[in-house]
Image 1 (spheres, rainbow, N blue to C red):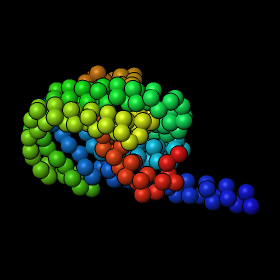
Image 2: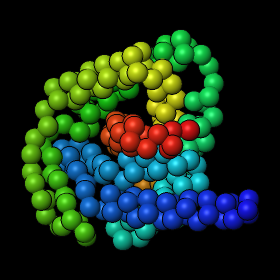
Image 3: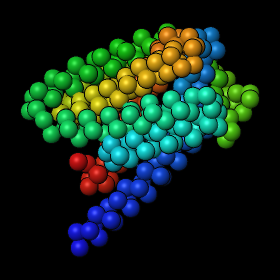
Length: 247
């Protein structure tokens, strides 16, 4: 009986991982925003990696991140695919492992202080990164494959990022104090996993591709932060509807 249950569990996890790998691929390809003035660029593929890892753990996170992102790169930028497979697999695994380990530790009062601190750090980082690298004229590309010309052209003022940073900081602090003190564990898990992604791409571009790797660092940090603030509400909504996913 136990073997049958384990087999069913493995099959469910594998099916979930495959589905989320497809989500990551589609999210990476179908929606991209470019800032020509600063060469800033981001997609929402990171968001789906974080959602997979936070909801279903390290194995699903690693599979979805590595396979899903690598397939997207094979279609868009094949030279990045090998590095992406390793970097994004590790990212998904790290987020999933840390989220499960840390959420069980420390007291509520300690988590409140920790979540408060992270809220301020995330808000300030988002305001700085966004205002420097994601402000000005923006080009939105939507489609599979992405069109050569932008689907929509707009403008993001610097003030938008200041306001967004303030709102994000406020909501994280409010969540930590009023709703869920351990909210900081998910945030820190994503930050650590995201920083692995930033460092991993820097090393791959610097050592393997011999490109100007340092230029991409702020863009990757921005992608991590945007992925974080989009993924966390999705995770909380899903967990509210399906509390069995809250581990």
